[in-house]
Length: 148
Image (cartoon, rainbow, N blue to C red; front, side):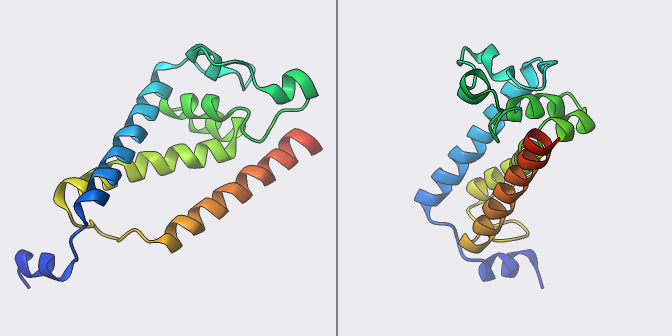
């Protein structure tokens, strides 16, 4: 089977979705570059404050970190190549950053070519990822921040 006939079997991505997927990919790349520029906070959270954002409400007012505390720090560690520190800081943040590292180039290529590369995105795949990511984030938070 030649290359052209393979493409004929793969449906084209509509133009509006191509623009959307390309925009999402660029946003992911921007988030990854931003994380690479940031210096991971030694406290394990608060790295986002380097962007001019306010401290998290939970630890400041409630004395307990929220499930998202440490996500930016986790991304910064991963972009520095420190996988272990990224995992130890916030497992949900680590998974989200890895998902962006893998899906940003894939989405951008699909947007440029107008066809899916390797696998086709579906609502089911997105739902499985989001539910899995949410469960890991909450479980990590309960174990690390509330039980230990």
